Length: 95
Image 1: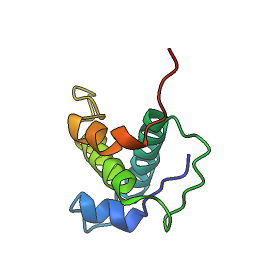
Image 2: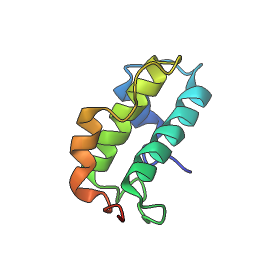
Image 3: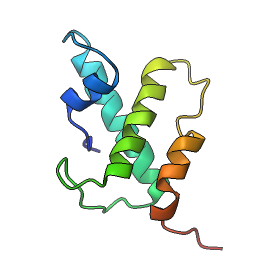
């Protein structure tokens, strides 16, 4: 899934000002986007860089930070903060 944040936005969030990790950061931005969109249950969201809601962008950046720093997978990338940001936008589960 294409990332809903730009490489520049991702690097700014991660406080990275060099270019030798760009490919890894781009891949992780795409992974973070996929995690958030999957949580929302909106595979056909239709958002772009320009139209993605701010709370979704913030959730992607928080998720990116976790998966970038926690390469061993010890921390759930869907933190309470991410869930809180996205809760009202999530399609309800069917019983």
